[in-house]
Length: 339
Image (cartoon, rainbow, N blue to C red; front, side, top):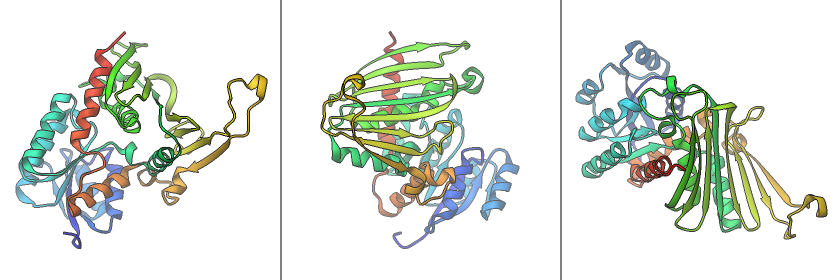
């Protein structure tokens, strides 16, 4: 397998496929041999654009007629469980768009099925794979002992009409929950959340504080009744702080600042001024090779490459399904421990 092209199929030719298909088409040791979608015209259009030889409407039909090394499951959240379960039962490695299930039970079930089948099941928590995120995470680990991680993921949207089948916190904000846990590098020991409803019949605002087993404090703020999409993270420790921008109006939406302490105690700008700390600026698009296409610098291509390499080498994905289970358990805790 090390020197052969990895043959993959794609189930789902909708919106999220528009970042995976161009990414996969650029990976030299990957070949897309089939695509499937219930909206057949959509699958046909994608096949024509990316020179995919086989088109299917039903995933069961595709599974019975082709043999591949891996399948990208890119369907909407409420349909994902059955599709992934069928792929694993047919003996396929799978890349699963997030979340791996709309409940922890579904995610745990798929994890058990993958283990029983002896197959790779990667989950597309693409924020982990953003080159900028990887760079900052590694630098901060060298600079300081992390003591606090803060996440923010806010938007303007009507979640009651946009998320019919499960909470937007479970299916969408899970990206930010996963990142806070990933940066903390630990499991939660305790959680408390304030949950609200603003102009909505369902919950659409969550503010949580998390105490991790390793002593790190985490926070997460999420709200769908704000001015715009804002997606940021902060990582703090004695002597260093990092600010990661993965979405802010008027910016490229992929940059970071790392602040290196001057060693001078700072608590009052009024008394001692702003100080002379070293600030390191990182352009995430340049770091990813200068390609400003979203799939290239925002983790989608990186996670696709990771999955292909896992198939070739047998190593574990950066975001495996058993780890996705732990993030879903944290989501459950954050919802259950409402104050």
